[in-house]
Length: 127
Image 1 (cartoon, one colour):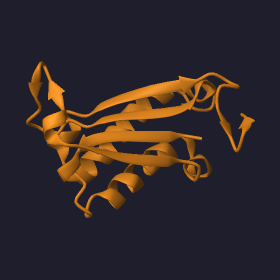
Image 2 (cartoon, one colour):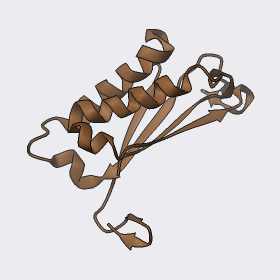
Image 3 (cartoon, helix red, strand yellow):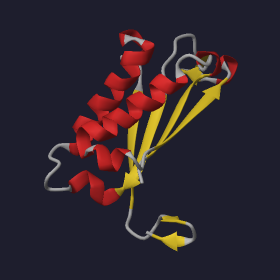
């Protein structure tokens, strides 16, 4: 199951952007893996107070979201999905840009984390 965690400034989550971000990140999965896979996507939007976010030893002044996509390791090497990593990074960044603007997209960090087979589960059952 694809699982997104997006950290961004708390004040950005103002009740108007959340649905767009959830839809944009889910659309990124659909673009690379298809609609069936996207139906399993979980998105967490995590607001961090501006004074608790630092870059280069100083409190951050510009929005620079960090997005981690966690999914099974094998999803990155499916033969029918060439260049999955590069396509995911581009699609995720574009999804953020469509909601928060190109300037924010240009500062967005995307991390892809692969979970080895058997090291995740749902409902108490290893997947």
